[in-house]
Amino acid sequence: MRPDFELLARRNRDELLQNVLPFWLEHSQDREYGGYFSCLARDGSVYDTDKFIWLQGRQVWMFAMLYNKVERRAEWLECAVQGAEFLRKYGHDGNYNWYFALTREGQPLVQPYNIFSYTFAAMAFAQAAVATGSDEYAMIAKRTFERILEKRCNPKGIWNKAYPGTRPLKGFSLPMILCNMALEIEPMIDKQLLDDTIAECLHEVMEVFYRDELGLIVENVTADGQLSDSFEGRLMNPGHALEAMWFIMDLGVRLNDKALIDKAVKIALNTAEYGWDKEHGGIYYFMDRKGAPRHELEWDQKLWWVHVESLITMIKGYQLTGSKECLDWFERLDEYTWSRFKDTEHPEWFGYLNRRGEVLLPLKGGKWKGCFHVPRGLYQCWQILEKCK
Image (tube, rainbow, N blue to C red; front, side, top):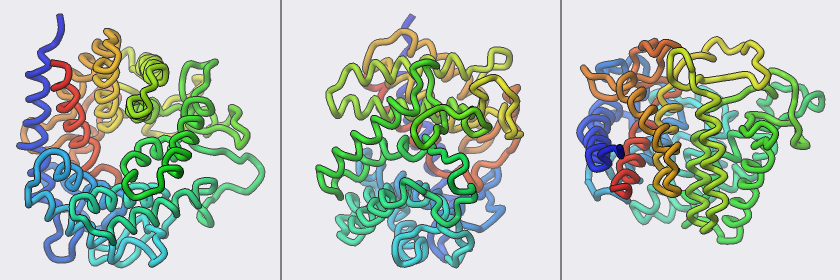
């Protein structure tokens, strides 16, 4: 029996508009220094005031995007702009090298070693430029995107701790995020550059990191695109692969490429089956390609973003192809995610569960969890489910 898509759409919409967004609007905004607190306890109280650039950028993006696409609410625009101004003033070194962390007041704490500070700054200023019409915001987005392309072969630069030349590896994360970011920043960049970036990222994701012999995506390959029998080379991150597949589906729609969409759906289904914990349910955080023990102690945790992004992928796969397998996975993931990550006593969702699906950390935000995956997932599922009616 088909689920009640209208009911599911309304549940996602109401959770977003009545629960999650008000939580971040009320608790995260720093009214004194600007920007956002992301280290929020279960009830929204602030337990640390350091500010992490990629979470700042994500929240600017979120509220600007919702202002642009859902409703032109003044409080959403105000929230986005005050965060963008904090980033504009303090987030970079003057040449759009974006720091990783700042003090509450905006003093640099951690050097610009993390390329995702750059990617989310670019996305933030692209959406903020659309929301405000600011030429300066558009310029910042464009300049930051250029810096990303300059750094993509060695994203950490001088802060790369790997010894050069012994085992050079390249990672899946950057081409994956560029698949999504290219469309976000489209109004600010040259069409040929956009087309070239999309083509390069599609090749990397679908022909280099996707391994036909496995039917799965690996996290790291050698510089010449081969598998590596090492901790990094054997690493599998099912959540990354599943999130990437809805980015690829969006590109498939953009390019009118049904074969690309179908391939993304196939990879998503393979990944969900591979990553699902057959004993306790939920999707593992990290796995080993050869079944060897992982060195990350959190390997068997169940994380919010993995499950939220997987929900988007499966309902989008169903909407675009009518795949019953996608719908079945969506219903399984929907039950698991809403019954375990949603906090029934306080707003926003938990982020970290143990393997058995019990809350491991009661925080609502921290160094890695901010105003992004939960609200973006609710928005995406709401929009897609309305098309499935």
